[in-house]
Amino acid sequence: MAASPVAPPPAAATPAAPSVLDASPAPLTLTGQVLRRGAELQISWRLAGALEGVCLPAPAPVPQRRDGLWQTTCLEFFLASPGADAYWEVNLSPAGHWNVYCFSGYRQGMAPETALQALPCRVTRTPGVLQLDLTCNLTALLPGGGPLELAITAVLEQAGGALSYWALAHPGSAPDFHRRDGFQLRL
Figure 1: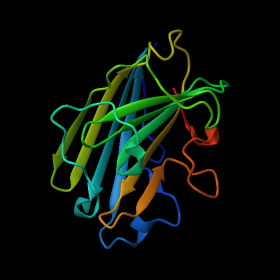
Figure 2: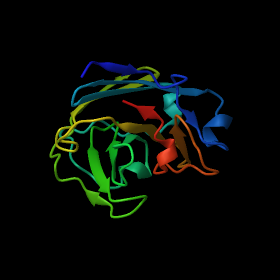
Figure 3: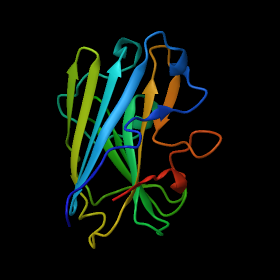
């Protein structure tokens, strides 16, 4: 399969309204890039701006599979085969911790995905920028290959504990990353 570069239209995630971050004196931007080559999926997130107001865990010396990563700052994506009820949620912490859950249907049958035993990502921090890059082989999840539907999302926790929910699209009246109409990218 030929490489399929996809930049999130309009190349940036936006917080759900109303968003705590909308009132921040210094704005944040979240942009990214998605690329698929056969069974390999590459995703990059770039969070820039007033990062001192965002809870960012320290880098872990040994990143591990962890539950509950979405309860604080977490970069995520959801993927599914078109028309299938089942889908996966991938959580990546700026500390390097990760998890992958499979669902049998909309918020149904959540279980850790045992087909993946590691999900190494590269986290780079510079003043005002957090960059997270992931390369993932999807063969264990989708052995037959085929097209994918993706939702690229993030949860950002402010220093005071408030959470904001970022996505390419928020199709409902409240943030819900599990909604299939939010899986806006097609690869």
